[in-house]
Length: 161
Image (cartoon, rainbow, N blue to C red; front, side, top):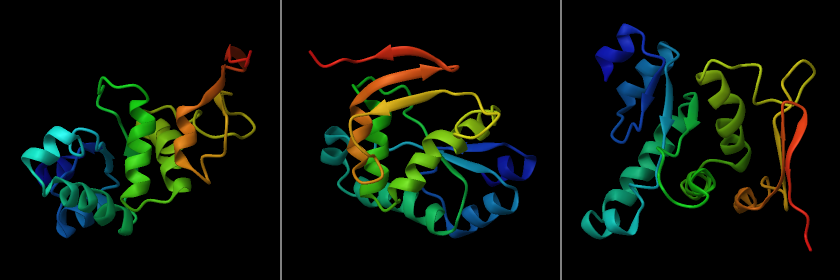
């Protein structure tokens, strides 16, 4: 991993066993960490490897406390609300709701090379979701999408009957 960072990779995926030295090197090279936790925290994994919870905690807290640029992925995990569940896990393991929302939006957009997305600001592309509640107070609100605006146009709107 260190050779890859020194060679200039943009991101490190997963980062389960990052050391302090790894995190420092990634910060020096502006390498982002794109982490995901669902498989590590799955009941199957935790039954087989009870230490997996602590591994996941360190894979969030060590880079987060060091101020490393972090995105969040779902690794195409086949469950409902996979990205929302990832967000919930990151909050449970120590990230603030605000930082998790930034990781899911503006930081992920920056990492993916589309910095014109992920922020609500003049000149930015208006891709938005409307939620039933405020995710800054309860990150589980990400599971209750009520509407989607894509490119400034309503793409989906959920109306309660």
